[in-house]
Amino acid sequence: MSLLPEDYNASEFEKESSEGGQSQFFSLKDGQARTIRIMGDQDKPETFVMGYSAWREGNKKSRPNTDRGYSEMVEYAEIQTFTDRNGKEVERKEAKKFWLFQIYNVTESRAQVWEVRRRDIRRMLEEFERNPKWGDLTQYDITVTRTGKDISNTNYSLMPEPPKKPPSDEVIKAMNEAKIDCSAVFKDGGYPMGALAEDAPAVNDQENMARLNEEDDTADPLAPLQRVASKYRD
Image 1 (cartoon, rainbow, N blue to C red):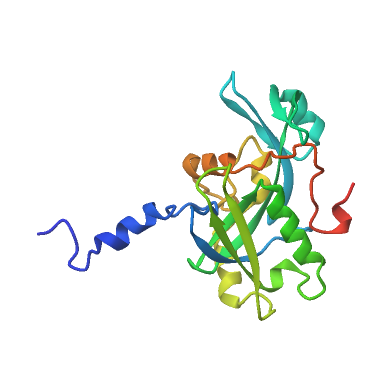
Image 2 (image 1 turned 90 degrees about the horizontal axis):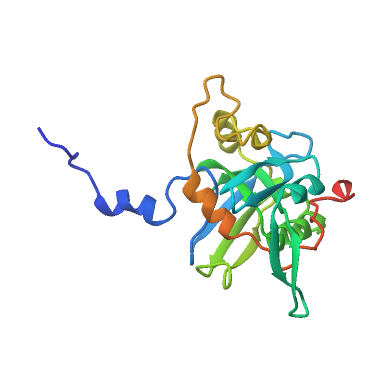
């Protein structure tokens, strides 16, 4: 009788937690790089949504995400102090903007969702979408690299990877089996992974969600929400 199997490898087992774990939310640590395939479709809310969220420090509670409008979240948010481009401190209410979409993590061979709160990442994705050499984000892989350990020095680079080709049958199968519904985040803070399954279990992924919040780019909170394509513009 033995507790551990003969082929147990401690370094491999511990690697999952040391490199960000098996979270179903895509996130990276300093120096990490992952290749992904975006699987979002503007016409299918289960695969891609845009929205807003707000946080009230006094209540230590985040209001459920909404797609109803920026003003609704601003009304809920508490007043915060920001530094404008001229170095002057100003007070105002602020809501966070995000994109949330399905991805296939090619490096790790699994389905995930990516909540993009950083404006610079949204802008890079929009530029790829509009570039005739690349176009539709679902037709090629993208390698995402992170450098930096906190919001003050963290940067991301995104590199499209040839060749351009539709997702493989293997990728499509993995995404279908994951039963992801991105729009679940608008349903009282629902969890997207497995939300389309009839017996979807409650899943707690607070550690990685907190990391995503810390990575939120608030350097210029007055900037308009970037859009993936022109039809999203107000």
